[in-house]
Image (cartoon, rainbow, N blue to C red; front, side, top):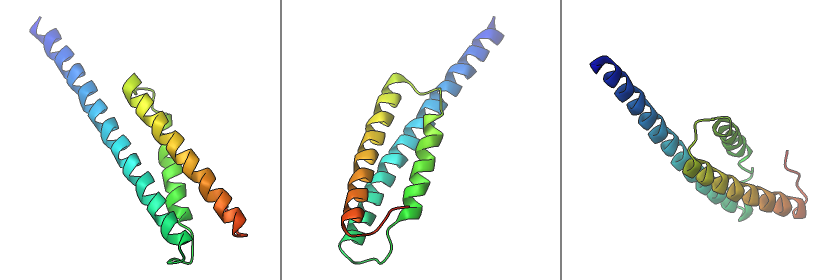
Amino acid sequence: MAFIGNKLYRQNQSKLDEAADIDQQLSRMEDDIRKLKIDFDIYFNGAVKRPPLEARARLEAFIKRIADNRSLTYAQRYHFNTLVARFTSYRELWRRILKSKGEELL
């Protein structure tokens, strides 16, 4: 009986560790979105010559990787979808600004 209890405890602990890891990834994603917005603001104000396209591509790949994770809780999925919606609205804003400046986003 103790063996089964230990196994259940380890499984439960593993799920808690995985949830904490996902929460850290969502926090990192939120920070990356904030930093990317700042980078684009700096670019649009003329302080930098090139738009931060590499950082945007890395963030999009990170979003795809988290989206494939099937073990998100409902709260984590809601937080993730909120962050994706924010990123999408920023991406469309950046696309429109670049288009109005005569530049094309790849």
